[in-house]
Image (cartoon, rainbow, N blue to C red; front, side):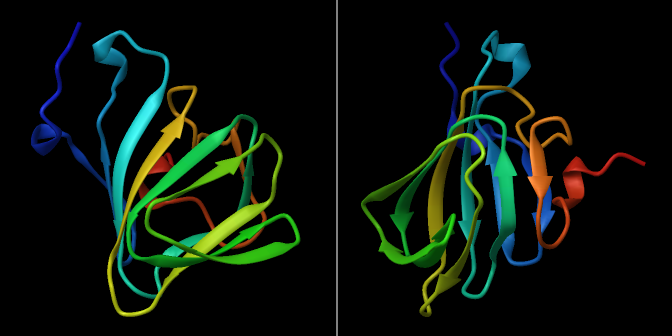
Length: 129
């Protein structure tokens, strides 16, 4: 069983003002994805869907979140529970950087097979040349 030092997690290029570190990797023998993310005020994720559940725990900061047609202001110590196929996106509001813990029950959740972007484009590290 691997014990992972989060400080050693590789950072992936993501979006302007948005940083992502994958804690779990295929080499750990798991089939799920856990990542730590930080997003500066104004940064976030455009409207998109996934073929599987996504859980986003807000550890710090405040976000405006859209899930399907509903818009909510969500603060730290709350978790977004996003079912498969739900249209969702968010941006950080206020003046504090958000810190997020994100879980997917699969590896490579942002691949074109698993994610459909309804607005904007895929994060830079997921685009294959």
